Image (tube, rainbow, N blue to C red; front, side, top):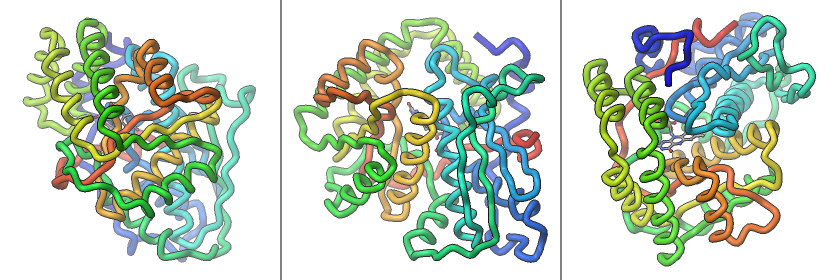
Length: 350
Ligand SMILES: Cc1cc2nc3c(=O)[nH]c(=O)nc-3n(C[C@H](O)[C@H](O)[C@H](O)COP(=O)(O)O)c2cc1C
C-alpha cells in the first residue's frame, strides 16, 4: 500500500548516505538563524520507525518550527501515528542537546491542537517550536557525552551478550524518564523475558500474515531507507511482498528478546500527541546515554503494533494506570556498523 503521491523510484532517490556533521563547522560568529540551521544536521540523525524520517523543519530568526510529516506515516503498522510522533520527539531531543552544546539557551513550546494544522498542507502538522537564545547555559560533562553520542548512536540488531547492565546506569535511565513524567519498566528476569519473546513471535506471525503489512514494509525496504544498496533493497522488497516470513522472523526476533539482559518499556498515563513527543524525547536521551556508556539499543515495536498484544504486554508488566509506549532491548553487543541513510536537509526544511 504505497502512499499515492510518490513512486518507489522517487523514494529511492531521496535517501542519501548519512551526513556526519563536524562540530568545528558550527558558525559561532554568524547570525542566530544560520546557527539554528546548522543544528538541523544533528536533528536528522535521530532514529525513526523504518527510518521513515517523518519530520520537517522551518527556521526563521531564532526559532525552529518542528513539523510532523504525516505523508511518511506507516499507515498499516502505526495507524495512530504513535511511532511517527515518537520519531519526531527523538529529532526534537537531538535539537535541544545540540543547541546546548553550542552555547544556546533553548525553550521548547508544543503547538496547540488548534494551531498545528497548516491550512495549505493537510499532512504537515506543526508540533513544536524551539526558541534559541545566545545565553551560554552551563554545560556538564554528561551533556557533552550526550552530544557526542548523536553521531555515534546506531540501532543494534545483533544478539546481545549475557553481561548485565550496571545498576547505576539503569537508575540514571529511570531518573531521566521520571523527570519527564514518563514511566520506565525494566525486565531482567528470564521468565518475563520469555513471555515477552512469546508475544513477539505472535506479533510477527500476525503481521506477516497481513499482505498490507508486508507491502508497507517492502515499500520502506525498497526505498533504501533501511540502508541496503538499491539492488539488495529491491530484492528485499520483493521477498517481503510475496512471502510470508512471519514464522522465520518471529523465531529470530524472539531469540533477540531472550538474549538481551534488559527489555525496557517506556510507559505513560496518556497516549496523546504531547505525550508521544515526550516519550520520543526520553527514548532518544536514553539511547544517547546508552551509546555513551557503550551499551546497545534496539527498539522492537511489533508487540505494540497489535492492539491485543499491547494489552497483553501491559498485563504482563502489571501496568494499571499506564500503557506501554515504546519497547526496546538494552545490553552489550558487537557494534552494528550499518549506517542508515538520511534524507538531504533540503528535503526536510520548508
Ligand atoms: C518509534 C521507533 C520504532 C522503531 N521500531 C523498530 C523495530 O520495531 N524494529 C527495529 O529493528 N528497529 C526499530 N526502530 C529503529 C529504526 O529502524 C532505526 O532508528 C532507523 O532504521 C534508523 O537507523 P539508526 O537508528 O541506526 O540511525 C524504531 C525506531 C523508532 C524511533
